[in-house]
Image 1 (cartoon, rainbow, N blue to C red):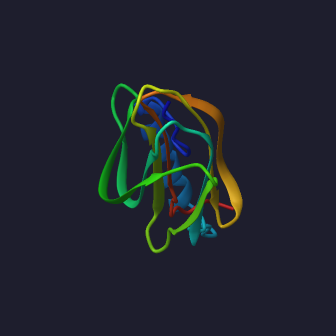
Image 2 (cartoon, rainbow, N blue to C red):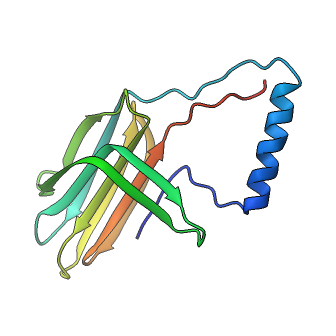
Length: 153
């Protein structure tokens, strides 16, 4: 099962119209800039049972594209891969800054079921919580891209 946070599927015309309205709104008044804070750290916690070590891929250097059919495509520029066991539960912190996003994939490479829970925290705040998922030659994916945008206040 693939889960991506921070992605919204909008019709192309709605996105284009929204960008025009945003451009008019920002051009017509003085706006106070509000930027989303980029997290310093991402903490990944994985618990459960697995018949074999699970593959864990993490990256802060990736691109995320929404294709015309609505599917999400992740392209990793650089990533770290490790195999983890769940006894004791996996709990590790990864640096996020100075990059703009974080990607993690947990994969069971065999057909024998693994039942796992995966949580991702940014600077201590729970952002992703996928509990008691059965994986059989399948993965859980999470990606988040911090935006640097200006809003009108």
